[in-house]
Length: 412
View 1 (spheres, rainbow, N blue to C red):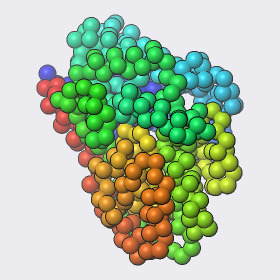
View 2: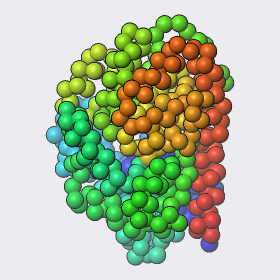
View 3: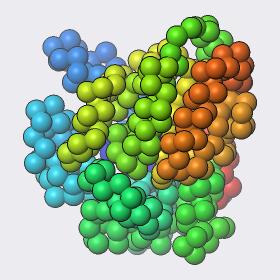
View 4: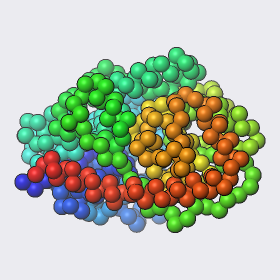
């Protein structure tokens, strides 16, 4: 039987749209369910503030996907409005009516209802962590195959690392969201995994966090995510301070404090740009850092890539990740990456050629690598060229091809 796959995700992140596009191009896509499907060149866009329009334009999908998309926009529109207006109480973790958890859960329930009513001709559903428990349960009743995409490592492994980190860095503890997930949310995560017929992950690290907790390796399929089409050549060399970039949410799961400590060791010889949103919970050392360093809360994706080209190195010292799309994106823009084993770094990087793998919680190693790049500009330029070459081996086209082949093998 030919695959007919219903894809569900509330926000349509880069990896999600690539999966949906892969299935659409292979004529496997039965439908795509999300919150917002913003039409390209929508007339209303002329009247919206740039900050709102840029958010909506991130929800524009390729035409083969958009044609099969149904949306549930109201709660997500409320979340975007609450974010803009600073109504944090409306977005409280899990409990806020416009929280990410509520948005995700409502879409999951809507998809479950659609499946139970036999309102779609799907013979498989492809869904993501936190948004699959109800829809998978409904799919099981209709003998529909459940394909699960886990973009980050298993929650028990995450909680263990973050609990340890909260003791080590108490000033940053409020930014560690795994510490506040309710038992009900964690039970839904386990139910999703239990109902999954196949689990798709993007790195060896994520796979290990599952097998460490006795999830069978034969259910796990590792397919690394991709990157934009690489630039043709790296940016030219320059004199002056080393230009260091971090991209990601500014919480301690990303190892933010260790990067800040490393930058302090370089003093005036390095500049730091922090590109990402800060947590809703107050964190005094983070607030101090945002006053000291260049901080960009958010940018359209094209401008994120431009920022990457204007820097020398991306530092991504995450304590716990699943992949880290910023790693492949940085490589595609011709900048090397310093990251940890708890990301896709070991799957992607060649040590000393296009990046470095350093231990988690190790500001000394970060500072040493940055100092080396600062004082060996010729080597830095060779690493930038190598980064572009590496990016060519991890394009989105390759991801889509591998995903379709693996899903076809499982479903036909």
